Image (cartoon, rainbow, N blue to C red; front, top):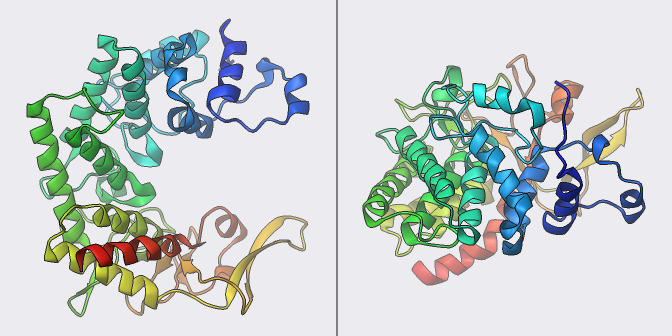
Length: 373
């Protein structure tokens, strides 16, 4: 479909530069042609999260809000990976035609979370009832998706395959709980948007979510460790997702969960045991003496490989197998492997197999221990 730009196209590019912190070199800006501009979902995230409050008073912010309202499904949620700020032009009727879809509303890849945040920030500067109504509809979508066990699927109300599982991947459930907590506590920009009866519902949903987190934590010899990217919505056990995402110990998403738990005031003994167990596991499974190197392979393509380096900072594999807790790698064939070099070029370079996320937890963990242990 041809992208038809509105008269506000020039304003939108200026708005990105001013309010969304776009990194366009000065030399490029001088010859910039809006017709050639490619709008991205990454930019949409920057607009929502990095724009100053002043931006939400502008006509451009209101124009984008029309898109946010247009993309909102009747479910109350939004689809993912959409550059919602892109001028719709003649595509508006197509977008509106998808409003009744039941199978693409999600919190995956920051969807719904971003749109709710945008509407909340916009409403603080433009208290228009339509923005608040759309926001509250989104909150109802969030509450309606929660399982009785406290978890959330990846998509709802309709889902298929692994979409039904409790989803920590991409921090979907953690971000959902963070918005719920901010609404419950009236933290800006989510203040003045819900009444006391809604806050009571949100408080109950938050508590159930924390209970789910504690119940899904993987235990080894009755000791709490970390979490998988997704857990079965019935048994609560680690569950698979895509063919290369096997049931496993997952370090990256577990870090966001640990950080959320450490933010709980006056943690009970179960929460304390959960945090301590997870940090003990992460510390025991950090890898020394290697780093990930970018290089050009024999075919002239950019590639990745693991190299030995005694001076390298500690690193963690994304996945560890559930049997021996050893680093786990997998290609689209679903066969587990022990080394990054054993999987094909596409998955080796198209996925994050190592990370240093746990390193950022050590300082706040020490502060948390001083306060509560």
